[in-house]
Each structure stands twice: as C-alpha cells, then as structure tokens.
Length: 170
Length: 170
DNA sequence: CCGACCCGACCAAGTGGTAGATAGACCTTG
DNA sequence: CAAGGTCTATCTACCACTTGGTCGGGTCGG
Image (cartoon, rainbow over all chains, first blue to last red; front, side, top):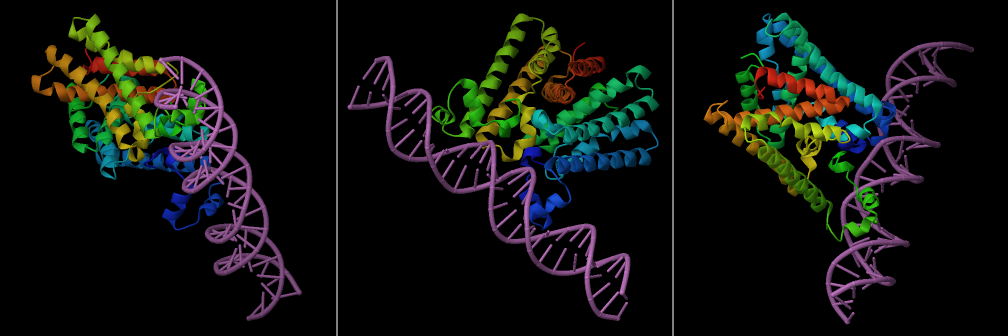
C-alpha cells in the first residue's frame, strides 16, 4: 500500500503471497473489494495502536504527546504514508467502498484525539473536535512532507514546532 | 493534474487540447518530460501568487495571514490539491525529474514563509525555517483532509485552529 | 525544399477479470 | 471402512482494454 491504489496490482500481490494472480479473485471478487479490505484492516490496526497508547498512559496529556509516534512509525517502516494521504491524488477515481474505508482512518484518529482533548482541559469543550482535526491534519501533513524527502528528522522538526506553539501538548 | 501522475494519460490530455495523442510527443518526448513541465509550471505559478500577496501587503504579518488563500483556492477550483500532496502516494515510482520539480513547490512555499517569518519578529530568528516548514505541512495537510471530504468549510475550521494556537498569525 | 506540426495505424506491455480444469480436504452415506 | 460428492483453493490459458510510445506519411508556412 506504499504506492497508491493504482499501484496496487494483482500480479505483484500474488507474487508476494506466493500465489498466481487469478487466485486472488477467490478471496476478493474485485479490486475494489481488495482495496477496501486493505484499507479496513489498516484503520483497524490504527485503532489498536491508539487504544494501546491510551491504555499505557493514564494521563491524557502524555497520551496526546505520544500521538505522532504512529505516523513516525510509518515513516520508519519503509518510508510509508498513512491511508488518507495516499488516497489524496487518486481520490476522484477511487471506488466508493474504498473511499469510505479510507475516511474511517481519519475518523478514528479524530475521534481518539477529540476524546483525549476533552478529558484534558487544555481546550474549550466546544472546540475539542475542531482542534482534533487540526492536529490530525498537521501531523499527517508533516508525515507527507517528510516522506517526500525521505527525512524522518524533518518530521521530528515539524512536530517540535507544533509543540512549541501549543498545537500539541509540550 | 487532479488525479495524480498515473492518472495523467496522453489520450485524455490530447482530447482536452484538441489534438491526437501521438502529437504530444512532438512537444514532450516522454511522459516524464510532460510531468516535469506541468510540475514546473505549477510551482512557477505559485511563486507568482506568493509574490503578489507579498506585494499587496506591506505588513508581513498580514501577508502571512493570507497564506492559506492559495491552498483554499485549489479546493474551490474543482477540489484540487497541491503538487506535493498528490505526489505522495506515487512518490516511489515517480521519475526523478518530476520528483525534483514537485519538491520545488514545497521549497518555494517554505522559502516565502521563512522570509516573512524572519521579517516579523513573531519567531526566534533561528527557528523561522522550521516554523515555515511546520506551517506549510499543516496547511497542506488541512487541504488534503478537506479535499477528502469535499468540504471547504472543514479547511477553514482547521486554519482557524492554527490561528487560535498561534501557528499562523491571528 | 524544409522543418514544425499533426495524423492514422500500429505495437509491446501491463491492467483487471473470466472460464474451465485440477488437486486435496472434509463430510456424508451405503 | 470405502466410495462418492461437495467445497475450497489453486492453476493455466485467455480476453478486452488501456497505457506510453513508434513509424511513416501528410500538410502547410517560410
């Protein structure tokens, strides 16, 4: 999933799994199904990671501070980017099912952030939602930029700036 | 350029220009050339827009405040995204020439922001560069997110949050 | 005449997807 | 227990279509 939906082709996947291309259709009838399944699994994994952080850190501020970890991990792992970002360019011709699954990724991120922001009092209760969206967008944008340069240090620098201005807890 | 580099195909472009596909090769030998040319023109246009803002606004703080305008305009105009974002998913298999041109887009944005941040004193002199990168990434991320929902109001909301925390001048 | 521009015809490669056959696991039944 | 049937997963072979790109020839202004 590092090369976009268009870059996703049955032959390569089959080869990677040690199978022939047409056999895939036995598990996923169409490419849209396959894409949606991949996307779904991706955001489900993310839900797990977010839950783990919230579990390990009873203090919501500490948990929030660890949020960028997830996006940083993608970069470390083969310079990957998150679902929403990769969807961007191909958004127009993405099958609807895939689109909704990808949007779920953003939704679960914003929901997690929003809840923690509400638990802390660092933001007015009515603004935790929009603040969550802003954080998500900023961190995803930083990941995007850093990936374009294959430079994780760049990512860290931008996250540091977000903390400096108070977008993220310091 | 709304559907990524892969979505860029000779037949469609030819039709749009009122020409047949093979004729394009007379102007751009290869697809990489075409892509690089499009990318180059895109960031050159952006340079012009940034210069216009800086020209119209003698106060650098006011100019900085107007920065998101450019990304907002792309969204209004057929829900488009900026070059760097669209490059994201396809980054791995993008021809080198295209890659460098696309990176130029980010570079000119960061340069413009950095200069204005230096002119104002709202940030320590040594940090204007990293702050510029953070602003660029955040605004691009907001554009990306908003485009995924085809919701310009969402973009405005996130920009407002950036201003609220002081990432962007209020 | 020449060079810039454009065309129709074509090509090799790659795409998602289909059809039909095969092999084995498992379950039912005489 | 053996025989048969069914289901699942895989295969080979193929298809229609799209892609970037080539080739040779036409057309037209300088």
